[in-house]
Image (cartoon, rainbow, N blue to C red; front, side, top):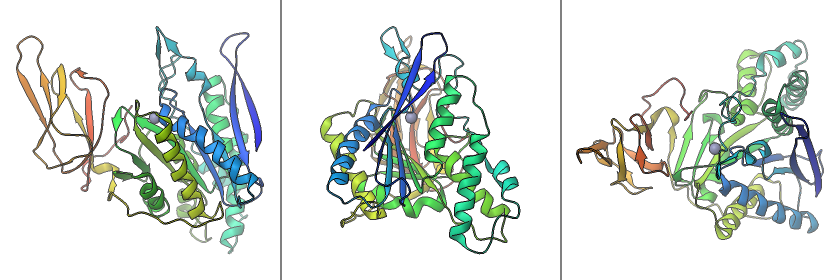
Length: 370
Ligand SMILES: [Zn+2]
């Protein structure tokens, strides 16, 4: 195990943040899998799993069964871990400017396409190597300003050479679910099966430039722009939502870390054999995922259980008006698995009340929560 600490100067004098990366196996070996957790620093389940994954990988390395290369960043956002305001950790948005830490990652497609002029041939593997170098160079030429963009830059630099990227998050209250691109669904279906996902949501572009897409999307874009040369999907990435914010215990962390280890056996990163369980969900379009919203303010209660399959028209939640006691029902407008909802029970008008993984696309524009 190799330990690396990347220092990020803070916003004021005397402040330094450190991002810890733990690497396993030969850095030139493939597949290379990059795993990070806690980019949203108030999402502990992924950090618990990543921390336990580190111990399992250290043992695998000592046992000599590591064939590929793995990097784990068990707490990817030390900046936000320090954003404790009156006792509450604010881990999703930068308190400096309100930006979501999982948005605004650069699209390196243009820069890489320019650098690849005349550099590609007929060998997909050689082309993949050239694309990987071009993307890394394009990122290196961008000089980030300020701690949050320096963090974005550093995390991307670590993931940019990876074959497979797992970004571990969680929701308010949720079933295990996973976001990826349609072309990567097949690669991640075994992970979804091993982790017991109840929803697997796919979109080519989900909007807002999240971390996972910034690493994989240029490959698809470059393949489309340069059709005369075979360019494989050299990096596939996903965001795994490890249930809800309070679903944190060592048993679950161990279970999730073991699922990721089993997935790495499947990928050939680790020696061994693994029996893949049946996938417990359908692959559905992110454009078909309903984001229920509160039409009025009030006290929020749920009729539908998390994880239930709800039919279109079925009441999912009720909002009780605090002044009149009137009850407003909120019904599903699509049929599917009710896979996530917020952890709070006070709704403002317009509040997002939960998500249903519908099979039929009906949304466009930005598809992720702010
Ligand atoms: Zn998150």
